[in-house]
Length: 110
Image (cartoon, rainbow, N blue to C red; front, side, top):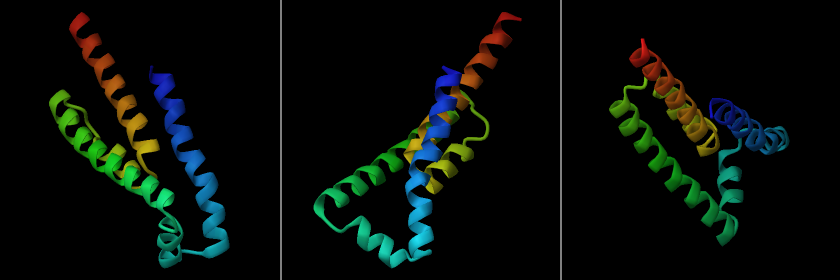
């Protein structure tokens, strides 16, 4: 699963930024234009609201589950969620959780 989550983390950065970086190249850091285009029609607003709710849920999950299980560096997937999105934050947190669980299993067997 670690490799699966690792590959998805990489794709979670690459795929969104393959669209975003050219847009920045064409329009610069024009936040007004970005918000206008993101909410240009109902389906765009639907998608962005879905992503926003998903990001809030994910951050809550990272904080709760990370504390419950004892995962270090919870801030990294939170930062990934805030800077890239759920497409990075979720697989990155699951990767960290998988690594943590493997370490805990190794400690128990020793």
